[in-house]
Image (cartoon, rainbow, N blue to C red):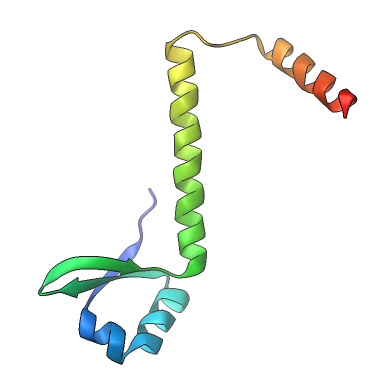
Length: 92
């Protein structure tokens, strides 16, 4: 199971301690939840963690689309698929 550790900080910390928050995100792989008036407002992540989450979401969307194709019988024998791919590659 994939999970991201979280830390909660008030918005004033973002303004006053940005470098600390950035370091916490990068080095500890922590999502920092910024609050305004005690309520969640934004989330700060390291760029690498953002890319990781984005890739996971894209993969899940592809898998959901494939699952829907199977459920709606939009499938073809694997040999046909490989034959089509080979033909496409030879055409390039």
